[in-house]
Structure formats: structure tokens, C-alpha cells
Image (cartoon, rainbow, N blue to C red; front, top):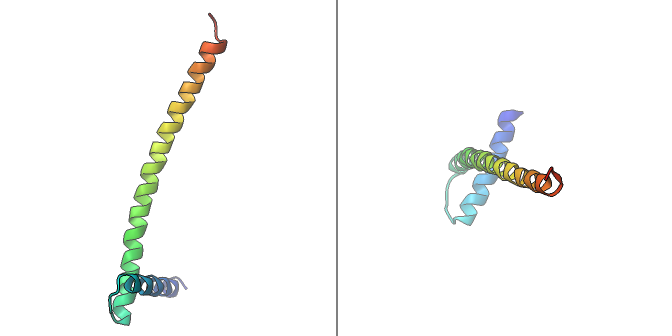
Length: 78
């Protein structure tokens, strides 16, 4: 079922991409374009999520540290 699903998704993605870009291709080229685009898009998306996740972790850590400093200044020993 996995290969069939890949072909269906590739065909759909290729179909939409060729229509948006106004390119005329055959069925095999359309499916290949869709599968290649899914591969490239998946890699780019994973990279963006990984960078955003690391950046979000850093921002969260800085905000948490700032909150801790504020609490210590406000309620800590004088």
C-alpha cells in the first residue's frame, strides 16, 4: 500500500504543481515531479522545524531565566 499511496500523492502534487506553474508534461513526468517535490519539500520542512524548534527552545530558556531573575529580585533575600 505504501508505494501505491506514494504514487497517488506524487501524481496529485505533480498535477497541482504543473497547473500552477502552467507546464505541460506527461503522466510519468508529472508523477516524478510530484514525488521529487515531496522529497525536497519534506527535507526543507524538517530543516525549518528543526531550526525553529532550537530557536524556540532558546527563546523559552531566556524568558524562563528572565522570569526567575525577576522573582529572585522581587521576593529573594535583600
